[in-house]
Length: 437
Ligand SMILES: O=C(O)C1=C[C@@H](OP(=O)(O)O)[C@@H](O)[C@H](O)C1
Ligand SMILES: C=C(OP(=O)(O)O)C(=O)O
Image 1: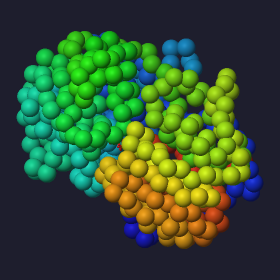
Image 2: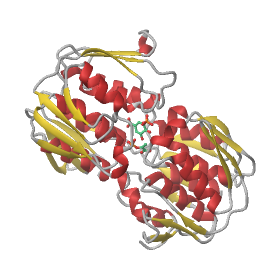
Image 3: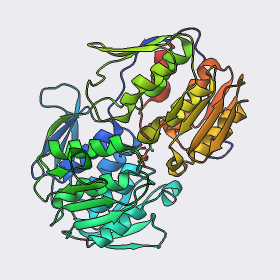
Image 4: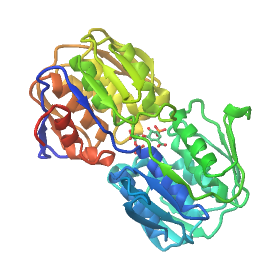
């Protein structure tokens, strides 16, 4: 964004926050559900879907390839529900991926099953985010793809109506979404798919588990390393997928700024409908934020997090839960002792280079953050107000809002970028603080 982008004066907390915050549906679950329902052999329902930039882009893309997506209320009238009516996938079609990792990675394998060319493009940043794992794998599995040779967007998948499939080796150390992408469409490949990860590290394992769980719930047979299979190898058997009736869990990573608000103000926030069992990485916040100060209770009201007034630094490996890093870094900048966040080198290739952006912006408010080879070292300092730049990154914007709760005079640039995964973050934030909308 340019220096003239809108600045949002982040509201200060007048005291300890005390609020109930209903968090919209999970981006990762909604977008997997849309893909799986579109590949199914019969219609399905997605209830309480997230409606945000990333999920609307996913739905639009599937529609342009022929899928019917009817938005309305569910059969029993309880809240929003989308009816997904699968159809023969076809090109020619043009897909705008925005800056959604799930759209740019999960859909090229779907396009390989379509009949006709499907062109993919997106925001300038989408041209820089890694896609080689998907492009190279699809070629090995029998797809024809035109790209400019950089292993990134823009590209055209020339779908032939079916794909051979079979074994493929990829290095998914830059994004777990390469693995998820190939597994999600795998049941529809003629020979299924066997994905072998060859890299040294693999981030975001809970997201791969989410993919496997949702495939199984749709009737797919999946062999995994965790179920006694070979390490680093996932196998999906070819077969039909069932249309499901699925209720989307709240997005636990989007619950993060609100729980963090309780932590940094010594207050209390309850998030209703927190699942008792989930593959979402945000569930790790219960443990991470507890060790940073405060306590949490999971009961029939949902998850209640209560801050203790103290904020402790933390030394933690976040490789499984990388998307939580910006919010943890913001809390760490307000703590009473140093933090080291490890295992997240791949965040340099997220919505923005998150390690560089967090370092620059927290330091811009007077902080002391240094980048390490695989993360951040954060030494808390008294912070002052100023502009918090967000680089079109929703999680930078929510991190800036959090700092603004307790640091007077923080202005968050382009808070509207939160719409990538949250439809009305500023409104939710004000309502948490008891301020008029
Ligand atoms: O599959 C998913 O839904 C996601 C996987 C992760 O991607 P990376 O493995 O690229 O970090 C995560 O950061 C992203 O927000 C969502
Ligand atoms: C990394 C993220 O998103 P994406 O799905 O675009 O990779 C994120 O939401 O933090």
